[in-house]
Image 1: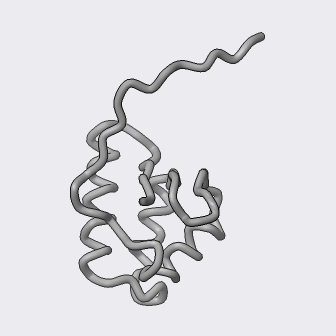
Image 2: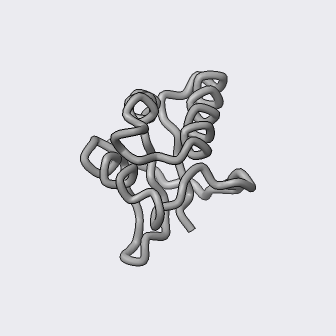
Length: 95
C-alpha cells in the first residue's frame, strides 16, 4: 500500500489569534501534556492540532491554567466552529 502526497492549494487562517504561545504558557504546557499533533519548529512556528475534547477540558480548567477570559472566549469560539464543521480537531497556525 502506498501513501501519496498531494499539494496543498490553500491554507486559510483567522485574522485574530486564539491564544499566544509566549504569553499563555500554562495553556501551552497543558496542550503539550496531552495527545496533540505538534509540528512546530525550534522557534515555535508551525502547526499544532488540538482535539475539541482537549479544548473543552482547557476551558473547564481556565482558572487553574491562568487563561485570560478573552482566550477562553476564543477557545469556545474555536470549539463551536469545529462542531459546526463536524470536526473533532482544530488546527492552529503558530507564527
